[in-house]
Length: 83
Picture 1: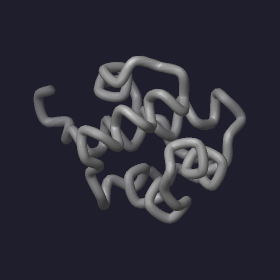
Picture 2: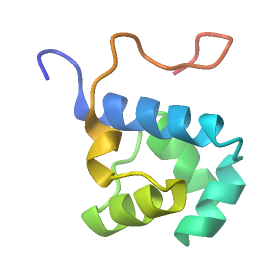
Picture 3: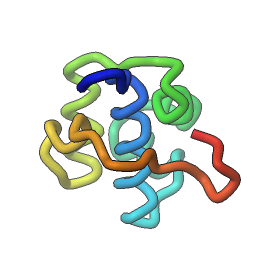
Picture 4: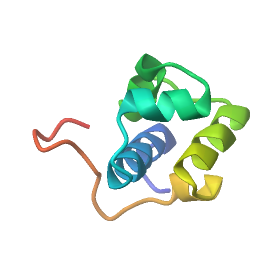
């Protein structure tokens, strides 16, 4: 992934898929069996989830777990530019 950090790619993709599905962090957390604060920490690339949690997040988003690791040309961020 060249100089792109895997935690940043995961967090950015998680946010993108969550927003595309019109889900809040709390809603995703509930579907994945965790708490909203943990989703926020993953999206900010502060925390990295276990393999089991990655599978649960992907299932909650109805995607393949590998989709969470595909680098995008640009980082998906909030309208304020915060990743």
